[in-house]
Amino acid sequence: MVSTRRHEGDWVHADRLLASLRRVVVFCGGFGTGKTEVAVNFALLLARDGRRVRLADLDIVNLYFRSREVRRYLRDMGIEVLVPEERLVNADMPVILPEVRGALEHPDGNLVLDLGGDPSGARVMASLAGLVPPEETATWLVVNSRRPESESADAVLRMLASIESASGLRITGLVVNSHLADETTPAIIEEGVRLAAAVHGAGGPGIIFVAMERRLAGEIDAGALGYPVIFLQREMLKPWETGGHPARADEH
Image (cartoon, rainbow, N blue to C red; front, side, top):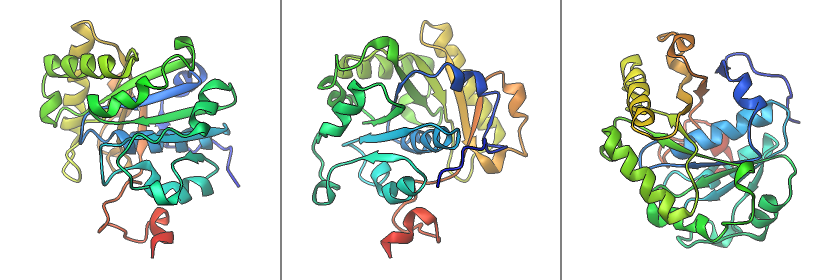
């Protein structure tokens, strides 16, 4: 059973973001940005807010970090996970489910799409163009300042343009998820905010929210960043990082 109680500590100043949220949210971003982790956590946050949530995995690029890896856990949390049938779960091909098309076309709840991390992966979305009005879709680029593809504002703008060209979507906002795995510090988070602000200053979209691991909540004044903050619980573990995580419990 899904709890509709807002979990204290899940976010800071994000109520306005949730109140004005568009029906379809697309997460895209380069390899290593943590895009799928952010998409999964965002879907969980919406479910905890009492919403009907569907999460569709359209990532055909990344072999290790796919939202389908935790599909049973997400379903237990009340999220409808739209992935290919079992025999196609690990297929590296653009498998577009009828359920994804149906979720795009029918305005019932929120649909979160985890899109491929480079232009070739983003092309999957082009086949779905036109199924939902632009005013009902938010497309957010996840930015990690510690990745070579997004080490400068110019680099982020080039990535943004290539994904837009391949997907047929207009990126409407930036999600800051600057991290260096377990070595992430508050300084790295702040560095990411400065980078995204520079992208916006150079003509790119604005910052939608900042994501950071929950363990950093006591080390940084999230309210002082000036943007909504969502705290992440690591859900997308590598195959050797099971560690008793509930999402992996069904794999042993």
